[in-house]
Length: 160
Image (cartoon, rainbow, N blue to C red):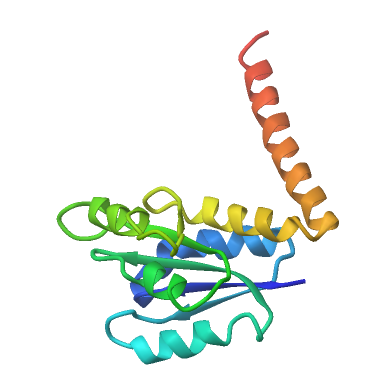
């Protein structure tokens, strides 16, 4: 099975990005978390991303706040799917990161989830990998059904 790389612009982002790692682990998807900054360690980002496909990665999740350039820098250096997680930071509460992530130029796509939406980024990465992994697809369906069953039970508990 392909792995998922979770890149963060700062170790401070781990509080948000742990949700992506947790959901991937729950689904049995191998994943690794790395701190790589598009601005402070651009060469390291380029080296890592340039070799990601050969290293067995199938999707890269990139999280950053403020200017949020990490996802774009990653996407510029790979043809692997890239998912951005804008992080709420600074005076704009993540809106700047969201806009930086979604306003990519033609030819350099970056899928973007909600501000601090790391869990959905993990789920989207798993869905992408499930296109070629039927067992993973079944685990995703089972997870979704369990969530629906939980909601149905909560609704039923409201009535005598």
